[in-house]
Amino acid sequence: VYNIAPYLHYHPGGVQILKPCLGRDATSLFEKYHRWVNADGLIGSLLLGYLETTTTRPDPEDSKSYLPQKTVDGFSVPAPRPPKKVPALLSADADDDDDEEDDPLASR
Image 1 (cartoon, helix red, strand yellow):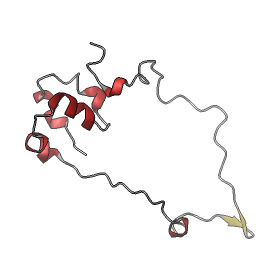
Image 2 (cartoon, rainbow, N blue to C red):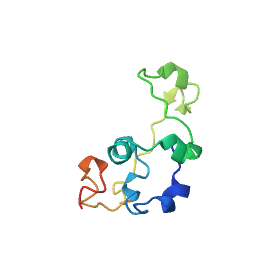
Image 3 (cartoon, rainbow, N blue to C red):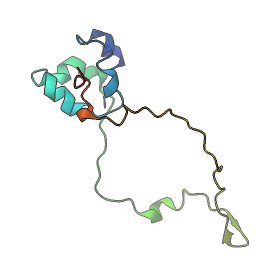
Image 4 (spheres, helix red, strand yellow):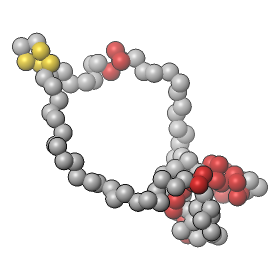
């Protein structure tokens, strides 16, 4: 995971072309256009860390001690119900689902 914010204005293609890649895995897109670039030499100092990939599910017993256990007379208290009408936090944009392999150049 990289924080490329300090690099955005140095990118030869400009900031706008990188915006669709922010917050996403842009490895395949980077390799498509910059296979010859040494990413470590270019933005290695912006490395925040590595994503942990696991294929095993955590044991639910391990998390029981961390979960709050509300009980009344030995019976569990249900969680409060969500409001009937949930406000829209994000506006829906018809173009957001248009992945095009997350390629910002696909529409050009």
